[in-house]
Image (cartoon, rainbow, N blue to C red; front, side, top):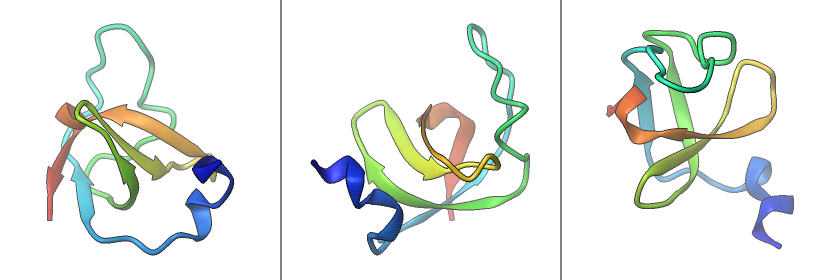
Length: 67
């Protein structure tokens, strides 16, 4: 049940959004280009961050660069 404590967990890394050109989904509404986000969790393909809506979201790593 890690998803219940993600928002309070400490972060080990930060990433910066470099683009929002999604092929399938609209991410421009919840990510801001140039803004840094704290990574709450990570998988092989996704970073899980608190987005502009204030909720946890999983986004492809291609939208970010490590800071």
